[in-house]
Amino acid sequence: MRKLVFIYLLLLPLVAAFGQGSKSMYTEGERFFAQKNYAEAAKCYEKAVKAGDDMLAPERLITCYEEMKDYKKAAKWAKRATDDGSPTAAMKLCEYYMYGMGVKHDPEKAIEIYRKWIDETEYPRAMVGLGICYQEGIGVEQSDSDAYYWFRNAARLGDAEGQYLTAYYCFQGKGTLQDYKAASEWAQKAAAQGHADAAALLRKIP
Image (tube, rainbow, N blue to C red; front, side, top):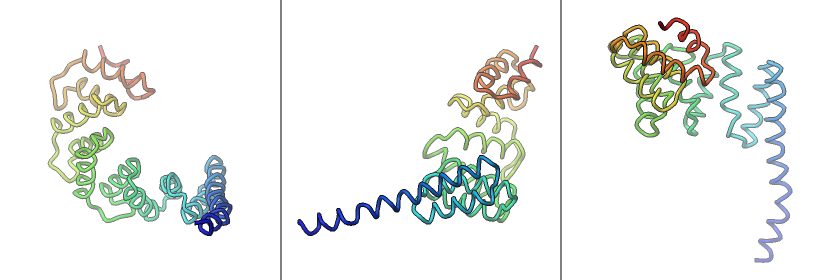
């Protein structure tokens, strides 16, 4: 037992140094990211991932490679982060499948991922994404009523984009009866969260 304790104490500084190296690379990446030097930021984030910092670096890598228009690499990191349980990455991956960005165009796969997150977590952004699929007829038959259904569900969970889209559909009478009162109420909720389009819509509602 004493021998094991001795080995543990001996290795402890090395483990701490390993963690510090990981964090320092992530911090360096953040510095470049703030400067919009996405190429250098990506290098640092990838080193952070290799050093064991898998929490935030993969999501940052998605953004870096998107900014550099390298959607193949962005999709690669989106897949990895999705597998690690990142909802933000999962929604990005759905977009890539919907529009064939960095991956094979596969809207059915996007819908599968959206439904998985809805069924397992009731994630409102997945509801908005699925609503957009119905709105645009991507991977499903176009349906304003189904789009409105999913936007409204997201809105009820407090999602600003869902609230804005619900307001817009009520204002236009798309997928539901035209209802200026409901449109105003949902637009106000979204605007209160800083949604600029919702604030603009409020000025148009009689």
